[in-house]
Image 1 (cartoon, rainbow, N blue to C red):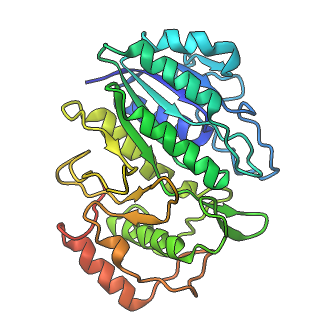
Image 2 (image 1 turned 60 degrees about the vertical axis):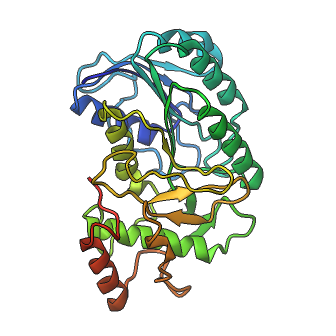
Length: 323
């Protein structure tokens, strides 16, 4: 069934493309709150990092019908955001990235806002989705984020807490940065991420040889991220929390969170590190298929690796398939 949705958008690229996708499914966007620090401006002189604002134009008018209301800032709209949460069927919160050069995120203010929203919709049928595609600011940032996400799962209205892998590609210095760990040489985690990209290749999401690193963040996976969110929203009969984090280092059963027929690789996060990448059956991440000589600029494959993953991709019980 179509929903009336409130979008709290810190990430312009994901927010805009998600809005477009939700409208395709017939959902109504009540209001968009833009909570990004720079209100969509590009601070890092990388022209293509935020240039995919092809949905909301410079006047913040929706190109399709010109009627989408966009309000900016947390401070000036705190009370209004809470009020609008009762005018919608569901709230989708995409966290704010404060600094595109250092990729640091301050979630304290956002935490206050989220808690007010959840307390405001408590006891109603309205649901809340927290969807994060990137995590920054080292171990402390990870701990803060983990504590926030754990708290969100305590609310009945929280429908999903979602996060994709948070590896960052620094375009200026042409190197990979794993923002979750203190050193930048997390080859184990990086290898697991490349395996995930391989799985996406054989599921038809990306093509062999595609450059998946993107210009600033790995936003080439944004379509996959959006599909996860969209599938959760459209699964009206399944209210299970789609939880990509762990509690007490125990991976939750997420194999039926979206669809009994869909296996989705996810990232498992403990309170201290984020270096293990799981498929729903825990098989893909165990395959150490990529060595340290892998070309980081664009994916490179070896024939044996391809054959293994081709086999797995055809085996519904062994690998992930994506809608």
